[in-house]
Image (cartoon, rainbow, N blue to C red; front, top):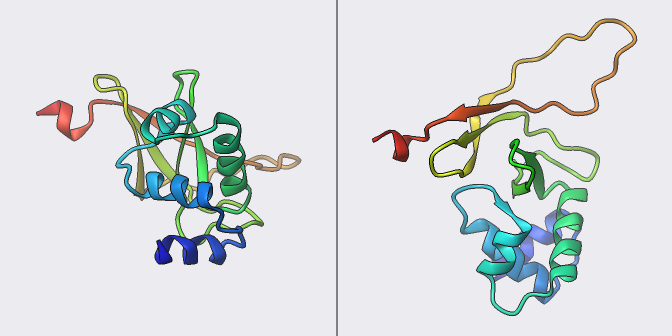
Length: 137
């Protein structure tokens, strides 16, 4: 758990027992997960404490939220350069229409979108839907 504790401290997050459990769970995931998925995947979790932990992680640049069109918010770990001042992981997310999993594609960056004068970007997301490599086989 020392690596997990260090990771929380680097993001200025107090490493409580629950936060360490939540981070450990997230590190083991291969795709983005919902709060319900996390709650079901971890033993003895309190939904409110889980939600507060995820909200703290998001506020400190440890996780980012993904809206994949399913109506369920999912979460995944951020890239290392995200901070309390903002998220900088502008990568594509992929939703598989077959297995219904959402994946971060950190090596596929979102191109810069130039906005007309008077507009200010607050957030950018790009979701691609199709078949993941496992389902395509």
